[in-house]
Image (cartoon, rainbow, N blue to C red; front, top):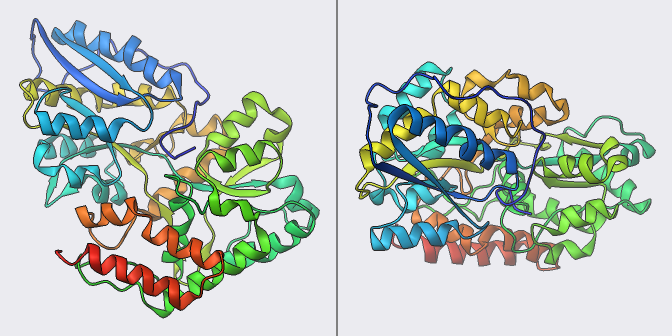
Length: 426
């Protein structure tokens, strides 16, 4: 399942939000309502905390009713598009990845909220600024990251003499060869899913120094020695460590393979460990999580940001603005995070050592990975063109076709041609 589309997590007792301080501009607003559009979370306690705790508390304090409108997993982009085209619908929306940049002209500048919240709660991670700031303005208030990291079977790694997760891609490759020989192959998605392919392919490319486009947002530089080395590595990594099936995998495939005990390592969110603890306790005991390996140019992770934006055409945009400010205050936000433990990783440093991280210490690499996380296409700025590159799987297919047998030169040239076509108007 994708970085956004799966997970339930452990819950812990959290303090109620009633009685908390309001943002300065809040006041009584009888008969007013604000609609918050959210993609349904597989973490039921997360949605329930908004429905049963936060929304009633806000209405009690301000007189503004909060309508928490849930949409099915995968349908949020269509809903956002419809709202922006018709100019009607929700007032506040959950938003993710590159969408703040695609819809920037329809979103309210919420820089005042971002600056106030950052000042009060330890400051923002740089990744939050990368995900929320468009042309100098915060068009989204980052809520959390859903990281994609390494999940590995400690018992099978131990069979080949490995008790600590390998630090580099080359070291992981050497371990993977031994594990595949023992019928414990790796499984890394190379198909057209949403999260688990980008979750390891972009970090691999960056770790070798490869990139699609320069920071100027127009110069295509995919054809490089660094890209070639990353592609060459991916080919041998696939051939010598993985199941052939991964070429057609989507986001659910590696999860199924994990619980069928077909694979010993994959790239995924926290959901594998959570589900194992709930339904497969024996597998849970031998499941661990680690940051991505490093390459010659460093260690990288994918930024899978969830945020909230206010539509600038909303007839209740002031009420929506005030609600978003309120829900990001520490007394509300801390409880909302805690309702899902660490599945949603905070972008504010005030939560770096929050008690939720001690509920399951194996999840801590997801916190530590925040400092080296970037949006797809980094270091190019997020743009419509970049969104098209991701939607067309340009980089994923470059690696997948090489793994399927095409030459490095051929796959890079094909990717370069696609990128130049997409960026020709940049």
